[in-house]
Image (cartoon, rainbow, N blue to C red):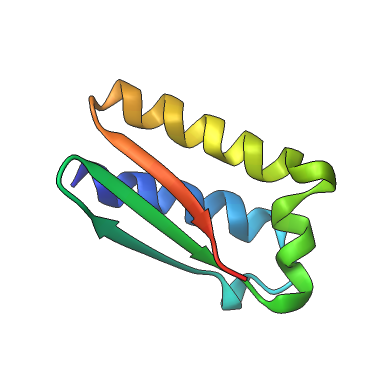
Length: 81
């Protein structure tokens, strides 16, 4: 259930950033001790999710790290092109 909450957090943030929120797709892959959150957005929204010099993506990863640490889990954010 905790990983679902992390997935929902990334989906919420991404939908707030993009012009086409209906095309935001977030999937979660569980590995042994880590959850990998895979984020896909519309091609024209990719720059908005990554941000200038990757600052937006870095901020999303920081938020995900803080939330997963609080839940005593490990999570990574991957942004698919």
